[in-house]
Length: 373
Image 1: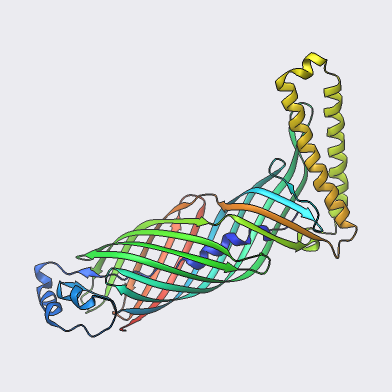
Image 2: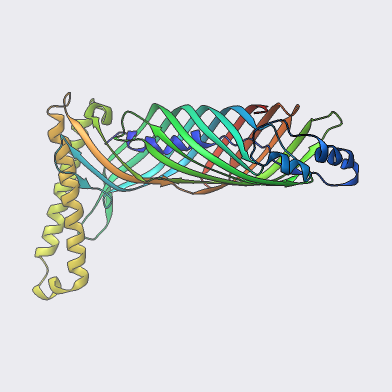
């Protein structure tokens, strides 16, 4: 069970991060009175957004109604795995939650995506996502079983780092409002990531509230914005697939490790049976002893089935397959973000953003071009 492909859906969130900070701004203040007056009388020249002319006549300055962004995103995120089931050569699958413990498991990923967008309404931006990503999934875990004293120890360990490519498609929307250069944006999107090792594309939902302030430069149309906010990831947790055994195990030492693990499990089963048979009928009837015995037997039986399945698959290693299913999620749904964007003019913007705190670290940079539509 050396494989990390069972987690590849987790990196799909990197393709869903592509919000660029433009917004409809309510012009206020005496120093902006000339701009405010011009907005009220100038005819709005574009089809979008809907009600764009009415919004400008009420003193709102609108960004250009269409845009195209090129985005690069990098992230590292700790992950949690539950309800792991594994089988071999299309045989029965065994739930391994009781005996498999994951430590120091995380995903690093980088993505390049494009984001076309339009302002459908003056305060609502909608966009699409099309991206390519590369990810490295790192897993360290072990198989743990109890002895007669209910002391658990590791009998088999595995760890791996694997790299994958994927394609992502997504849709999103961003309600925004701005007054006097201060603004609030609520970015949200859903994306589907297609990877050959998965039975079907994996889905993620991202929510990113941001609160910021834009400061003008002396040059017309040029400004810089700063913001702070949060980043939340929700992944559709179910993942299932089938893999070649030689993609899962290092075949050079797999047989020796499995043989040693089977010996350890058999030894612990002998200890548990000896402890139980040494109890009197009254002691065996105690709920605490009975629960300890049943728990140990269940864990040892599951470990035995797993190891025997690996052992059998190794006899035909070149043609053997591993079937799996699991539920997975980022260790922390939320993390904190800060960002900035330099606007050269109303057409061209350059953005940078970092996320930290919790168990996820991320970096985003984006170049955007806007035009009227």
